[in-house]
Amino acid sequence: MCLFCRLIIITSCVIFTLNSYAQNDSEYYYRNAVFNEKIKSVQAYREGFELSHPVYELGSNANLIFKFDDLDGETKNYYYTIIHCDANWNESYIMQDEYLDGFFDNPVDDYAPSFNTTMSYVNYMIRIPNDKVKIKLSGNYALVVYEGQDRQNVVFTRRFQVLDPKVGVTARVKKATFDPFQGDNQEVDFSVQHPNMQIDDPMSEVKVVVMKNRRWDDAITNLKPRFIRDGELDYNYDQGNVFPGGNEYRYFDIRTRRYNGENVQSTSFHRPYYHVTLIPDEVRANQKYVKFKEMDGNYVVESQDRVQDYNTECDYFFVHFTLRMDAQLVGGSVHVMGALTDRNINKSNEMTWNYDAAAYELTLLLKQGYYNYQYVYVPQGSSKPDATVIEGSHYETENEFEIFVYYKGISGRYYQLVGYQQVKTDF
Image 1 (cartoon, rainbow, N blue to C red):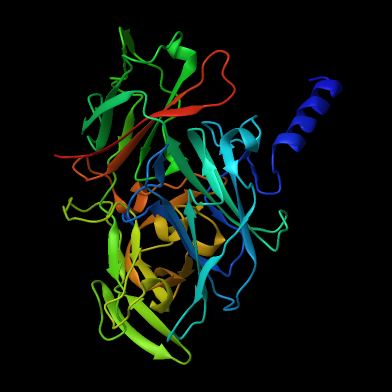
Image 2: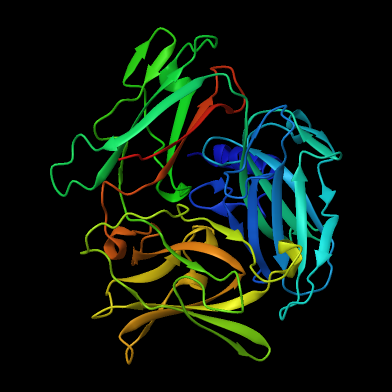
């Protein structure tokens, strides 16, 4: 590439990208990430449905809720802005006044201090849309929260989506058609109906994303329609739309300090904080499948103690995880993963091998609630976690799949989100 071309690209990035927020992985993109260790329990969902994916339908009366705690315990001046992204979560090449109606930067002015908790914190809440800012276009969005009107001082970023439903999506999940080896994979077949929307070139104008249990790291993003019919795009593949079935998420209940919840071995108070030790876990890779209901990796903040407001009266506990193994896994690391870790892998959720106990161990600071989690293995040099090494994989596993349909016409300047569907396995 010539020097002039490089300068043009760099200049474009400076103009259109808030690159202090972006994560560099061959190009800028936004992800769910926390950049300040004092920020905990970041949640995003449709108001009234705490386990929902943060998808807002354009023009509806519903709100998206974003919550977080600051464990410094002192009130701070946090601000937020909203960034429109393309289908790959890079910032779109459109200006903020094209997709936002109102102010581009707004204070987080809904907050309250914790009450009657051993660990002091301040709980903050953002509702979108609100009387200061509304969203005009569909697509992928990133909420960027920063401190003290300093856009360089970002504390966290959170993905959400705005839907303008112009197409229909029908889907089903079945045991994989082409699975000659272990028979533990699941296939997601779907079609997109667009009788009232003109699509001139489906191969280039339509992009679909299929995601399992809200894990963007292993979402399928490269599918093209297998058949193109009048008003319908068919994605009934045998191989390209296949996911490992995986296993049901493990779970634990820390909604009370008064007794041990499910899968909790002990709850103790070591001044000045509470500590929860979970029942030691075992590897499940070679065990038979056991069906039970769980939350597909999510969590809820709740308390069974006498409290009135979960946001400010739920306490924080140091939660101790133990994974017993015959020997340490070489060539990689083991992590605890789920919504409790933003479904990311990093040093904060990497487990430590205890030679004396013959077990992996980790301590996480978590707010009172009900949690799902899994153990994942990450090969050295890789950034992609593999849950099947420790958890095993079964085609019968209940999973939640989401299908996102994006459209960008030949002359279009941004990706619209025109279709969305959730589907669960039902074997």
